[in-house]
Amino acid sequence: MAHYAIKEIFRTLQGEGGQAGTPMVFVRFAGCNLWSGREEDRAEARCDFCDTDFVGGEHLEIGQILARIEALSGPRWICFTGGEPALQLDRALVEAVRARGYRAAIETNGTVALDEIRPFIDWVCMSPKTADLKVSSGDELKLIYRGQSSEAILAYEKLDFDHFFLQPEAGARYDALLAGALAFLQNQSRWRLSLQMHKLIGLP
Ligand code: SF4
Image (cartoon, rainbow, N blue to C red; front, side, top):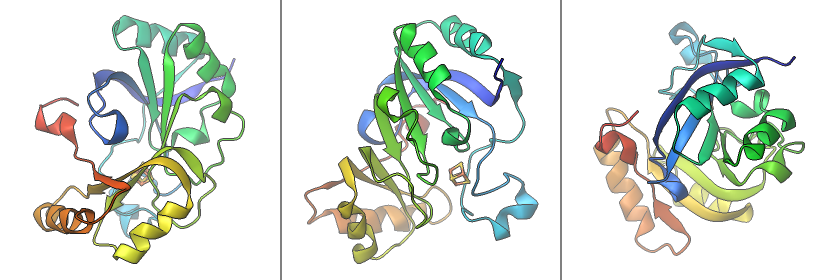
């Protein structure tokens, strides 16, 4: 029986991007291929601005994951996130949640191909952190804005996504980054602003 390393399973509203405001159960996988999650490794990380705790957790079987989800009775969307969920998420788990009537979303950094699971995922959100991308299509591309040039942002339009979001990086530079994102968006037709709405209303 397959086990999955799961950091946490919780109920909230999706706070970001194209599905902001949608009730969801978040299944957060432990582990990421771009950072160990340990502060002492951050300087060498391929993604060095992460604010998510994805270290540790439990090893759960599909039945245990389903039981946790159903105990949170309500949301019909399951968001597989991380860490990097594509390192562990497989067809068996996706099909299991869909067989219970849920819809499946994934939030991925795009560095792991989704081939096996892609046909069974209802919503793909890619948030690129490196140029090494194995995912080139999906529902939304959500770029964390850290002061990139307009040219660097617009280069993502060559990828096949239905929606493009720019989200200012949280942290000490937030106000300046929000202003920069707003300035960029003024004359764009394909890009929209994403805010971490769940934080504004005090949800996890
Ligand atoms: S890719 Fe995502 S989970 Fe991994 S270190 Fe970066 S922000 Fe954190």
